[in-house]
Length: 337
Image 1 (cartoon, rainbow, N blue to C red):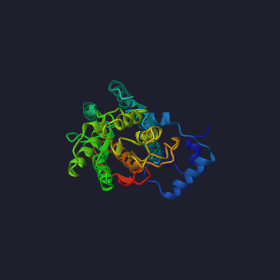
Image 2 (image 1 turned 180 degrees about the vertical axis):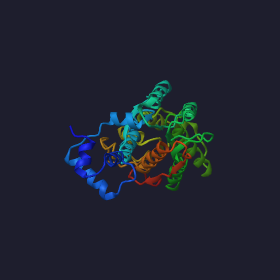
Image 3 (image 1 turned 45 degrees about the vertical axis):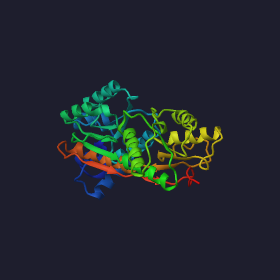
Image 4 (image 1 turned 60 degrees about the horizontal axis):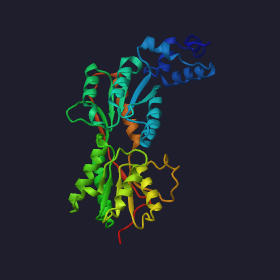
């Protein structure tokens, strides 16, 4: 089996130079780096990550703990996180707490105990405050995605869900809608709460009264859109437009409305959030959902960038990076006649 000494001989460099190239470290001229990489390829050399971690005291792993895997937006972000981590020769290991705080705490302890060099918490559970404080006290590299605590100084990548929800309602009002309903996500999660609050604020700013019958609280799980639209369309004055917490709910609303003889968008306009059509193409619908787009590619790139900075310098000043959403105009909305 070939080793770094064989690579060094073939490339005509020192083993230290080979080690720097393998570990993607600075201090190597580009032409030398290319020469070493060519030798690695010719010799079919595969680095022994376990041995490297013993020497460098680094695992080459970034741990990611999610609230749950059943949200399609998580899958989209996971792919991007892997893409950008690979640029730094890092692997990503994902764990789902299934929305269970004790399970999340166990995964955090596992990663911070030596299984990873840094940790990303993805999800906006309001119960994470004490857990985040505990991690920060240890000095372990940490990045949050889609969560924010104004009294905690931590690396954070957030999406402006509040403004996104305001923009949804404003868009529907411009189309002439006055009876606008909202199907929420789990409001223990800050993302869902921000979208609900944005919806309420936009109603007030447009002179529309808040109608509690038009707000259906859900856990955003499977079939939550179907069950909610059943409830909304049975009202004495049903809404003419529905804003759903996510795209899965939005497509469920479209399907269920069709089953009930309600045409989208002729009779009912629907707007989702996330714009993950590429993941939800298995849903049989001839209507493309209008939805708020989240720049998941940029979110992942920013999160990995913050993580690598923190791994290289544990004293690096924490940063907050925020991204805006923008509307994707599908075929699920029309002007109210």
